[in-house]
Image (cartoon, rainbow, N blue to C red; front, top):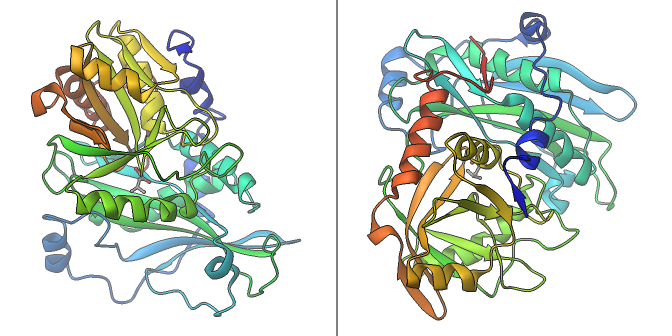
Length: 386
Ligand code: COI
């Protein structure tokens, strides 16, 4: 068990902790090949009004190509558009790919910032290692994001809960059918203006605890941000949706007794004594950047913030006897989302009377205040992009 006074994950998630000082130099490395058919202003403004998560994309994408022996080549910003792939392209067969999720936030003075990009860069490098893909440097990762945001600056929305979602990813682009690491890869960043992740805004979601399927297991790919983990979550998610639930929470694959994570989010439990608990990192689920930031913010407020094994039986009993007061999910896309109902094969329980929990919403507000520049950035998490 780890309490956040030792903040194990908060510290490690920061990776190098260093944002390259010379952001301008990094951006300059990208050759801007601007589209000759940008989206008309009126069309873009209409698209920014109420974008459904991940459905609208900006005019450009950042791109770097990699070849074994040559390294990363041809840094560029180019027109957003379809990729032409040979049917034998390795990623289509063996799923060798990784991704990240980040956001660019517009502050009241018009400047555009992102949140802890060095932590995402470090995780992207760890994911690359696990998937036998070439690692991108922190400089290229942050330079590509800044170059894309600058090219598509008019696509960064303003307003509460609106942001430009950034999706960096690398995939095996070599055309071959042998099972071995690729000798060619493509790194891209695409950007999508987004509002609240869930259609209902910040309303409590319902969670189905799946006791039959796992996304990943010990020694697997669960702590890499790898598409296959998400593919494995689609059937359980579909089955839960058929039962009327918004999301699935998975249990550990070894004992099938402890909470691990949701399909695309980490999970927290708030106890009646004010302590805040989240499953300890086991290597089989993702170390979320939002997760480690929440551990820090909860500790700053004087709450005991604990990473430990979180048995389902304890959470169910705690909801029944009142020792569990709130549950919430978190991630870059979902930010902090209250949970209002938790159910499984043998239980169906309301959480916080079906309303957003008080501490859940207080931490959410504090986090978003930092991200949108309304509160002091006392941990140095924000990086200006433009
Ligand atoms: C994120 O929170 O950024 C994610 O990657 C979750 C999901 C959209 C895949």
